[in-house]
Image 1 (tube, rainbow, N blue to C red):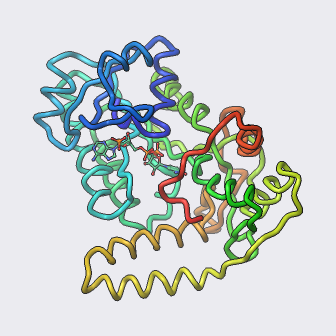
Image 2 (image 1 turned 90 degrees about the horizontal axis):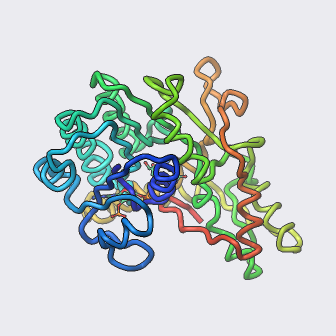
Length: 323
Ligand SMILES: NC(=O)c1ccc[n+]([C@@H]2O[C@H](COP(=O)([O-])OP(=O)(O)OC[C@H]3O[C@@H](n4cnc5c(N)ncnc54)[C@H](OP(=O)(O)O)[C@@H]3O)[C@@H](O)[C@H]2O)c1
């Protein structure tokens, strides 16, 4: 298992162990779990999985410290660049996966389950190109493969709970109905990833997948939050043109200062999610289609909001959250 310390990776380790799989996770040496440096012993006791440490970008480390000359049945990867910046994305989402695929094959692996993203169906960003490039290599690899392309995660749609709780308005682009999505919960997505190991109907397929219930807009997310908090809805509309200006200014400044070029890409990522729905794109119409977006699982975003408001769950900060 790769990416075992991320949001979906942690949920996937839990699901794998719960279904009786023997799980070995290959993580960075400085990986921190629960705020403390990870230790192989503690992790084995707490999660039921074995933790091994090394560098996922290095073929020698993967073989020596990860696979350790043992035979494995499958590789499940929730590995992804944490920033989405072009260099990081090509190093992790593409290159590290190519190296891991090769090392896995040598270790006898015959099956690969890859967590990708639905947004690669309309690739405009460097990290999407990097993911697509590896998807193509995996499809051509000869292994049994499943490429899971989920919609939006709860953490990416929970960044405003605190500000609304603190009496501030809910920020939306345009009127808050420019996009919609069928968000998917961490545990529901993890269960689906694990299903791919045994369910032949999920193999050798690209699998777009969302959560249960109808597609919802950012405005509906805000309305539900205000209702749960017992407050009058209050929205502040942000013009998309503002993001366009930020992208353009950073792109020009980035020609002189490389750090600003990276910031320009992050602004492009923000603009992409402000205007593109996380639903399956109908190739015949070029429109996003909620009915063509398959659903799995039981937890809705609004169930999650209710748990957060009740203090029963805490949202993580989404890496690409705009607000
Ligand atoms: N956010 C959304 O709404 C959304 C929607 C659809 C699809 N997705 C996709 O889902 C995937 C996973 O998302 P996530 O939120 O679970 O990811 P995440 O929490 O950011 O976790 C990323 C994982 O990759 C590992 N990683 C990153 N860089 C590494 C490096 N240089 N060396 C070793 N390990 C490295 C991280 O390890 P460390 O803990 O050591 O950093 C972590 O285990 C991504 O491909 C994302 O594009 C996201």
